Amino acid sequence: MVSPNYAVELLLRTLQLYTPSRSEASLANMLKETCVSELGFEQAHIDSAGNLMAIKGAGDPKIMLCGHMDTVPGEIQVMVKDGYIYGRGASDAKAALIAMLLAASEFRKQRGTIIFAAVVDEEGNATGVKQLVKSKLPFDYAIFGEPSGTQNITIGYKGRLAIRLTCDVGNSTHASAPWLAKNSIEEIYDFWKAIKSEISVAGNDSRSRANSISCSLTEITGGSSHNVTPQKCKITVDMRIPTTSSCDIVLEQLKGVIDRVAADKSVKATYRIEDKTEPFEANHSSPLVRALSLSILEVCKTHAILVRKTGTGDMNVLGTAFNVPVVTYGPGEPHSSHTANEHVKITEYISSIDVFSRALFHISRLHNNTKTQTLTEDKI
Image (tube, rainbow, N blue to C red; front, side, top):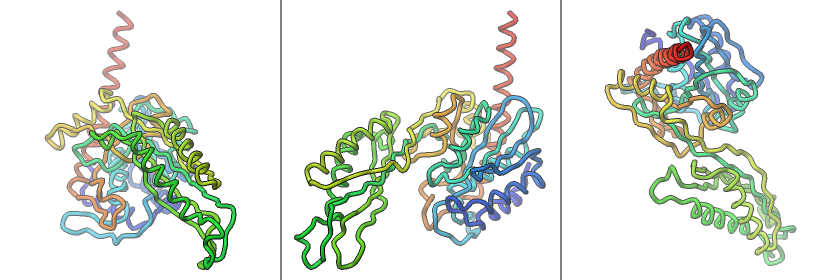
């Protein structure tokens, strides 16, 4: 088994590299070298999107382990303190990425094929995992590395619809005579109020946040000078969509709201789609869920809990594109992700390596048992 000291040291090395979305090359190159020189992978290369792809073993089953290298912006001092590792990406999601990598390094080559994918831009527009979909790599199972806590398996994520809305009032004027033109910043506020109230209310499930639509205003830009009223204003609206709905349904509702408000206010409103990722929920009874649940029971001495998250992950993209069992799992506290205090507990990180390692063994065992049983039934 990989030593805890080595596991901690390797995670710290990754955290020392600042890798906001689309700036992951330094980590990709470091992991490529580590895979080949230290961890026994037969192949490792960086694809056209910047993803690191590493292969170990041969034959079936083919198991993809997918984690992301990028983080949200904002550097945090990397340190070990009171049993925790701190740093940008400690929780989301370099701990899971390295835990999967180390578990894969211990996988017996004769038990199947491991495809380790360290992808780019998960925190952005999922450029990395979309490249995996285009590549049409064959695989039988996929595990995504995201903070769930060592006892939880993430089986569902909301979808994401992000739009950039522009309000154009057609003219501007000197700030000393504001009555001569409409103010696009003031006008766009009514668009946001209508979107937030109508879309959120239409998709609200008071019993569960995971089954409700949420709307967030995340960016606003407008104006050309401190003493000129703004002709144009732009906002970004981020909507998270449960599996009870879809991006197309929400987009149709959104279009109706924007068109109505624009007509009522006699202004021009246009929008473009920044991201459109459908909601996704995995098969709860797949061999993958059984294998991971058994591994959690063995390592953590407790039954796994299946959870649905209010965020959106790469599992949505790959899970929608391929009809294979997928789940998301990893060490870390989700609520510390993206914060100035981002951290992961060392014992949890080390335990997750064992969980991943055992899960790979159980996936291979269950897959081959099923295959043998099928062959026997065919002969009968």
